[in-house]
Image (cartoon, rainbow, N blue to C red; front, side, top):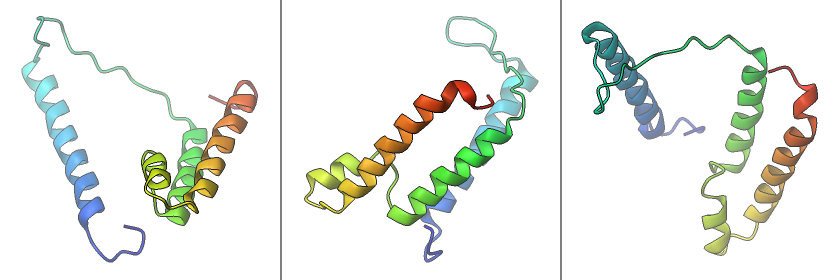
Length: 106
């Protein structure tokens, strides 16, 4: 994806955004309800610049390793031992965030 050699991931992500936007507009326009007859509410979330910084750090890690954090365990299990560095880095980053979470703007 990050080598811009194929559109597969961008296509999937772009299509998901389009389908999501159309679905939300349909839910609002036709006042659709859940299967249990409850209203579907969309709450406004305030902008947080920390999410941009976190997304950039996450994206850079993904680009450098070439793997989403989810499959790291599967890659290690498949014998790609170099991924242990990525896995350790991801776990360390998670720990650092947890440690400093109360001091970070949310």
